[in-house]
Length: 163
Image 1 (cartoon, rainbow, N blue to C red):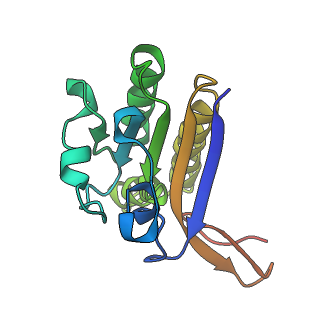
Image 2 (cartoon, rainbow, N blue to C red):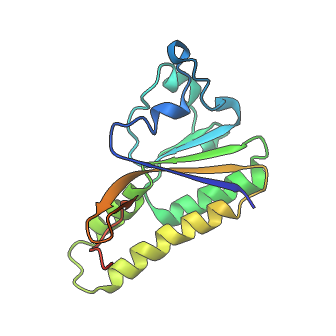
């Protein structure tokens, strides 16, 4: 079973930045030689040298992928788990956008079933991630949301609060 880490924070608080090397702050970051970076939004990584460190696709033996679809992500995680024994860290950046992307693709579907499907796909990614090899750190970076009713910060999801 992988070590599972979820970093939850508001936009711009350094979740993505913290994965990279920032010498002026004595932050080593994650070693790109053993880290697979799955960038859901395919946005530029916010640290110097990111293109050099994460410039080759995982499918080509590298350490970077841009994947929005939860089902595709499951296939990628399985590929990493089964064939990429060199990978020790798997980072999914902006995890909540897996749900947002699927929600927008299904925006015109009126059935509540779409929320069940979106939730199931996100659940499947997290469940597979935590069940990866025991030598993997599975890291999900995601935005926070404040639940007024419960008075707590939580991971941002799609749908209404029912607390």
